[in-house]
Image (cartoon, rainbow, N blue to C red):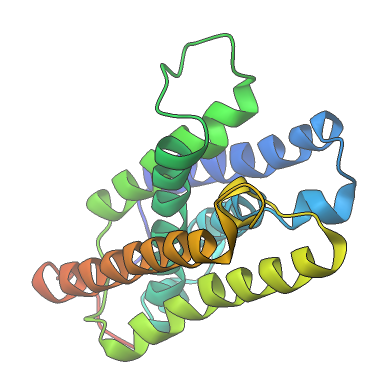
Length: 207
């Protein structure tokens, strides 16, 4: 079944907005392109933007598949975590109309996370997802953590202060932050799997 035109329209609009916001953030970055792309915010928003665009243009049989539901679930999980970590650990929750923050920050940390959650409410998962999906969703956050810590120990640059031993009370502090954030990822993954099982779409067949 094809998605309604209004669904495709907002997915295109916000998918492009996410990608444009990432690109527009590059000139404001003073750490170099490699460090810029080593931040979870930009990586996750590129992924989310592509998933939104895919949901607008891919064939119905593709977006009704288990694989695509896993991509959608990952997009929601990573975007919501970006929202929460930024709000609680980096810059706090602020009025999105606050001109003290450049518009790209508002888009990447607040607007896009809300959009993907609303998208999931409006167009639910087509399939019931299980523990395999949870395990797959956790690969990227754990890989990002390992990459950030290993690269940081070599270069002295960390994408976020809570991953920097000098800023978070040593490696014990880094471990505590990492465990807490990983637990948050896992909780979101279980919640999304539960949502897929409790509220599946009724207008598509699984593939």
